[in-house]
Structure formats: C-alpha cells, structure tokens
Image 1: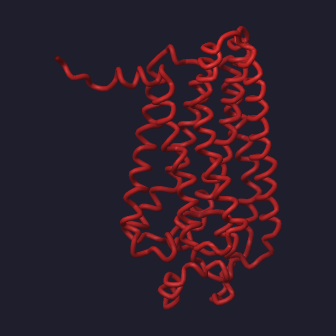
Image 2: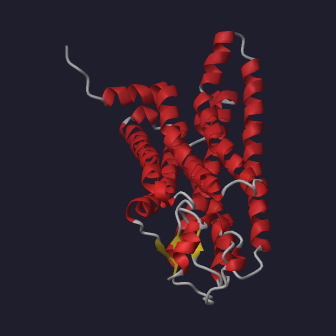
Length: 331
C-alpha cells in the first residue's frame, strides 16, 4: 500500500512503467482508477462542469426520445435515427460519468477487472455506434433530397430497424477482439490506471505482454471503420450538394440545405474532438498526461451534450414540440 501515494504524486509518469516492478499478478481482481493524474486536488472543482455536461446530456436526450415517441408526426426515418443516436449518447455518457464522479466526490477508485472490461466494451463499441449512426443519418438525408419521391418506399420502418441493428452489431464485432486480447494478457506491473475510466490503451500499457497487435488493430479500426464512415458521409453530401445546386431558386437551395444543418453540426461536434484526441495520443508525447485525460473525457461528453441542443434549436418540428411542452405564462 506504500506505493499508492508515490504513484498518485507522479501520475504523469505512469505510462513509463519501468519503475513499477511490483508483485506479479496475471489476473488482477481489480484496477485502481487514478482520476486525472496531477490534478487530484482539483477533482471536486473539475466535477462541476463534468456533472453539468452529464445532466444536460441526460435531460436533452431523454427529451428527444419523449418528444419523438409522443408526436406521431415525427415517426419518420430521420427521427427514428435521431432516437437511436440519443440512446447511444445516453449509454456512452452513463458508461463513464457515474464512476468518474464517484472518484471526484468519494475517492472511490477501485473497479473490478470484469467491470473494467465491461466499461471498456461499452465505451468503445458505442463510440463506433455513434459514428455508424451518422452514416445512417447521412443516408437518410441523401435519399430524402436526391430521391424524395422514393424516400418512404426505400427507408421503410423495417429497413430503418435493420440499419440500426446492423450498426450495433458492427460495433460489437469490431470491439470484441481488443476486449479479448486485453482479457488474456498477464498484468505484472501495477493495477493503477492513470485515467477516469477504463480506456483501452491506458489498460493495455499495464500489461506484461507484446501489445503491438492491439495497437495495430486500433489503427485498423481508426482507418477502416471511422475512415470508411467519413468516406460514406462525404460521398452522401457530395451527391446532396449536386442535387441542391441543380434546384432552380436560391430559396429552394437554402431551404433544402437547411435540412442537413443539424446533421452536419453533430458530425463536426463528434469527429473534430475525436480526431484531435487521437492525434494528441499519437504525436503529443510531450503534452502533460492530465491534458490527455481531460481531452479523452471531453470528446466523449461534448457530443452527447450538444446533439440534443443542436437538434432542439435547428429542427423546427422538435423545437415547436418542446416549446409546446414547456409551461406558458398566462396573461
């Protein structure tokens, strides 16, 4: 137990594990989540914006689900995909925030090995699911603008359901190999994870094994899954822009493009922080560890928080229903 204060004090050096030759344990019963290394004294203050973002994400996404379920006029593919995105955001934020807040508020750092793997699965699989949902929503916008007369026959309810199921299955299939590799590795250095949640590479670097295969697989997921998603989204919007440019009037072009505004804003809110975080992990070796951890949390918290705001503000149908639900002052 005498090692813990030393590790917490020098949390920014945890990724170089040469100084931690503690007792071997090939199957650790639990890990210790450090939180944000180097900023332990500020955990309570850091928890305030984290808690605020989580609350906004919960309220906003639940409101989206409630409004779409209650209004029959919103029972369309676009809003079904939006509901799937809202569920994805709820699972993603709930996978990391409760444990992070328990670290900040109650110093509850222990996490069972199986619970750590479960958290890792939900975080990474639902991140891939979110990317897939943006592809599905881009497909909906493409069909609605480029083939408006066939929209209802192409994107039927069964097709929408199967698309959502395919996105979820794809995420699980691509996430499982890394999870299985992490489970079978021996751990003989330390059980201290310099993070607020069980991020895959943070756990992998604790293993006494060759983790290059896992690193290569992570790059494969980055380029093959996320890269292909971005390519499909780009192709969809190239076709959409071609269709918009061919419209006869400026008002028609602006109105049509306006239906894509919310989707484009959500895409930017998801991919820009994610790509920035990945770049920092790959090339930002001189950046302080606490900055990496904060960035990893922000990139998972910001999209679930801003997505319902974006769609609530920019989508008239949702905005009108939301205003209708709010209590009005009687004159």
